[in-house]
Amino acid sequence: MSPLARIVCVLALVGGSLLFLNALKGAPGSEQENTGQKSSGGVGESTRSADTVYAEAKPGVLDSPQNCKRCHAEIYKEWEESYHGKAWVDPLFKQLSQDYRDESCYGCHAPRPIHETKLQTAEDRGTRRHSGVDCLTCHRLGNHVVGPIEDPQSYPGVEMECGPAFDAAHPRDDAQQATVDYCGVCHNAHGTGDEFLASRYAREGQTCLTCHMEEVYRPIVTGGKPRKGRRHTFPGAHSQEMLRTAMAVDARREGDTLFVRAINQGAGHKVPTDARHRGIHLRVAFFDSYGAPVAFQSPLDKKRGRELTVDLIRLFYRHEQREPTQIAPDGTIGQPNYRETAVAIPRAAVGGKAVVKLYYLLVHSWPVEQKGMLVAQRELSLKEEG
Image (cartoon, rainbow, N blue to C red):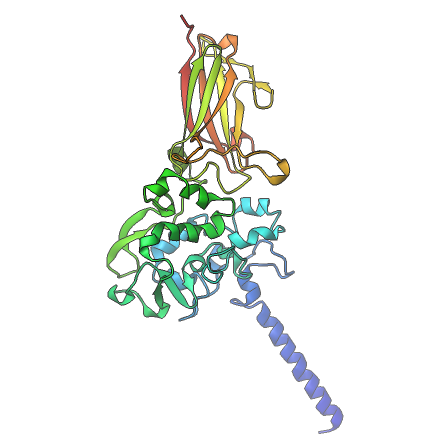
């Protein structure tokens, strides 16, 4: 073969190899595919269907929540439908992170396994972000599954392929601090865990799991024997039912003034907590003796109207330079579990009634009428005194 022919052959082989490697980049299971990122390298929405955003499970290697689905189908489904499972794809997160441009959000919405960072500050795992806060986030320790089973071999149905390991660093007799440590990797960024530890609920021996991971008795793995475990639905601020157990309103009249209270009656932390964009609107409406609405002026912003926000309960952004108005949990030393606001009663409402309502908004600036979740309501008669 002539020297020229040999050169042509070599170039052809190199070119073919490059084409092959380039094809592999976009293949299912590749790093680019698993992140759900567009081919441009940005962090935009995936074009893949919801049931193919996760990496394929590899036997004996814990690198995808798919590893857990085969044996823990019921728990997997609970997680997948929860806001932990939706942490990355939730449209609200996309909006508030400015279409994923704010990378400071990545650590808590697609975190590395918390044991890899020794339960310290959450870090972005940099891959398969569409699985959000997944099974591996809390349960992976090396190539083992961290869980409450001290002797996995005593539970029929537990596959040793997962290498279950009891987390010896957080023994059961310190379960309360353990759950605060686990959840606090993300949820104590603004003090939620510390708020709980200061409440009466902590002194009573409750944990984060008491409210956010209901205890159930069922097989943990398919074919296994039933035992005590936890649901993986993680209800919280998106659950109107949970918000209604957490908050209440009250009202009393003193002369020409209506005193209204927003009460934290059941949350083990401040309300709202953690996220600065959330807000609770305390609203009042007055009605005359014929049941017709009466216009009045809000003490909060001096606006006039019928049903008005008279107090906004929030953890404010730093640039707003305002003290938080959050309500502490019951039993917090030196802090009441309510917030009270005074409202002047319009003369036209005397003989009628006042209606006090609490609305929860995932974004405080959203219109209450369209987006607010009504979590508590109280009606008070304003009959003529004397």
